[in-house]
Image (cartoon, rainbow, N blue to C red; front, side, top):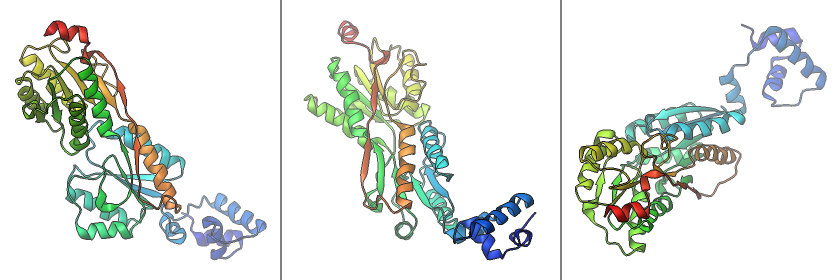
Length: 335
């Protein structure tokens, strides 16, 4: 394998001149540059990327941490980030925290040791340790995605969880429902639950604690939560993430109930297969690809010295109207 010394010898120039051409770090006359480039081509020379990174003080890598690689919402977000990064000549290094503080901080330490140019972080629920917070404050540019974390005071790109949930529940109420239950997830429930409460308040419907249950993200836990809520005789249910729909449908079948004839349902998240259920699922779609792409766009700007002030950027959701929410006519006859 050819070395920088071989290139210098072939071109009849100094090693410093070859380095200046490879790294574009100093002026080299057109004639010398052409000789160096010809020697590089003839010898099939590949620069040492680590040494080059140390010279230009950039690795063209971005560290990205997501909470759960098995959650269907995140692959499209990563796709958006990767496409935008690749177009700019950057590579994404991906870590999966499993929503655990220990794993999250381990990946962050790896990113810092590898001198990544920037970090995209979907924060795990727990507070970071003070030493880790200080490292990040002194480290490369960082952008938060999907979840806010005031302790870091970082530029943040999120979706309108409160507004999306509020719109979904308001839609059910407009269809005539007064007893609207909710099945929540875990780490992202706060905004969606607030949106649910807001819709109830705006329509003068008192919050009934018996109509709320936490199902986390699994099918089995979704089934247990749905079973508890359904026994309280709601006429509609708002499910805060799509992965619990299967558990909800299983609970309906167990209780010999039909959707939407006996109970209407709206879900938060739309993962592309909401139309494959029977009935098709009315759902709030988050702009997942846009979230990842915009996060990298902001991060690249920060790497160049822009977007220095912390700011929360909110992307809008879209409510897709399908069969599971039913209609006023169906529910008035059901009652």
